Image (cartoon, rainbow, N blue to C red; front, side):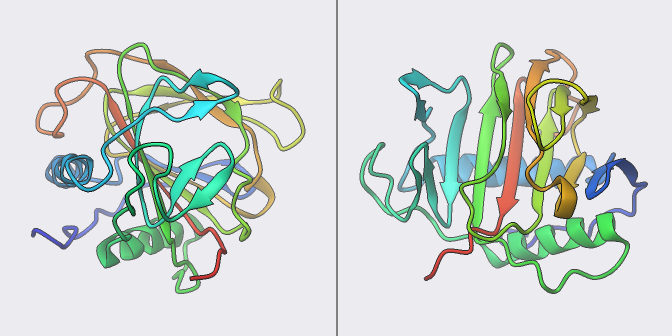
Length: 220
């Protein structure tokens, strides 16, 4: 199982907005634990976890990137703001994982979805993510987010403003969230980490891990 995600669970789907779907309980505890182990291996790889600088301020999360390295100025292959080394590639199992999440959200297979970047963020109890749009990608294909560890309050808004209307969603360990189409450029963020809510056996004793898969649309 060193390079293969275990079989996925069937789970319910909860529509949040047109194009946005919450998949609660999508991963079983042993699957969550396996993914947490992958994150630790990535963080011990060529480019360690770091907190990107945005508008002169450090993010409160610690990020590991695969496929492409993200900075506030866009994507690049090398982690020029960390140690200059090239990031690890996106593993094939992660592509299939993303396809499975999009298929579950759509209710139909998603062979068109080929994520080429993973942004994996670790949130400590006091970490947050401000409301923002994922608009650095050239392809506006689906964004897939997978949560492991402590429950967070995930605020999912509209495409026009950071203000209301928005929905506050308690993303728990094992949940997935998919947004595409009309919801692809919706503002979203994490307003709170609920410390002490990580379930036994999920692979994290504290904090939250968010793995986000995207298609950049960039060549090569």
